[in-house]
Image (cartoon, rainbow over all chains, first blue to last red; front, side, top):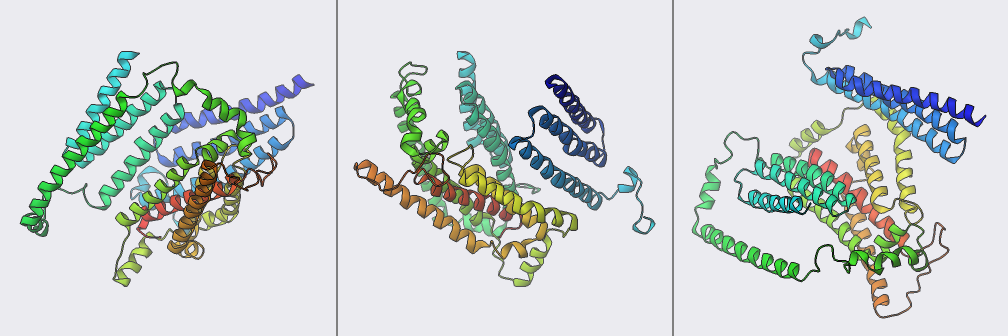
Length: 109
Length: 346
């Protein structure tokens, strides 16, 4: 039973680490800031969630698990907001936005 | 290893000389940065990695950024011809009194520098040899701190017991340094525009853009961050943390509040007056409380400050209030730095 639990936890943690690794890979692979932001946001939200779920399953539900849940909650509130701010900064400062990506006008949405 | 250390020390001296002799301020700052990096390698070699990290982050990183921003704000870099002086400066520099003062200043600076170098060299020659077995690194002080700190200071966290009880004088100096740094930034960067319309326009320019998503998340996060900071602050004597880390978190929370809601809403509960009152009160309370305990300790008097049960939240005598003082000073200083560099006022 203990072994089984550890296996499930390991699968979760492996998925989380895979998310973070692909995010780091994408960060250096992509050249444009919005693409980079998109990949980096995956690590903050999905990668962190999977890793923390793995740790909670491994260690059992206790006070530490509660702390981890709070950490995940904090990141799920703050991570997307920081991505949003970066994207807004890029849209408001880049004058050649049309060359980089397809921009829809406000009315077309 | 010995040669490597020697090379590093020679580089250090060379860097110090180049910083003072270079004509270009930008070059000086960059050389000063490399000075800090070499210093951090030396700290690692001397087995204090914590100081090395601090030196690399604060000495090479933050200080250089502050220097760059300051030089830009006062217009020393970014000009086409930095050596070109305008008419009034030339006129002032050609006055005989100014010239005489310049000569006196140079002479006094050389004399003072030589005296300080002489005194420091004299002190270094009296230090024990490097790597000696009888050096203070190996003596009974650290053992005493680890074994007796719960009994003598009442703090479960031995580090807090050290920095706020055995070595409280150090920490007082550090808090004062923070206050002095904030005061210097205030003197250099504050905008005292008498023209109220120009000031209003400038305030408008630096007002953060109102963003609904950021505001909604800040509504959730700001109380949580502040509460977490206070938790670390008041648990400083029980768990890792304390004044400096808790204060930094609270300062970060205040900066988030400014960015989300703007200066007007933050000024309702934190403006320049609050900053002055809080820092001065915290520092003077620290000074008075610690003077009292030093006085009684030095004269072998009973201090009448109960230590309480080790492990309780209200215990360990003066450490809890001193932690709160340090935390308040750190939080105020972080926020003050941010706003002063951003728009030149609080």
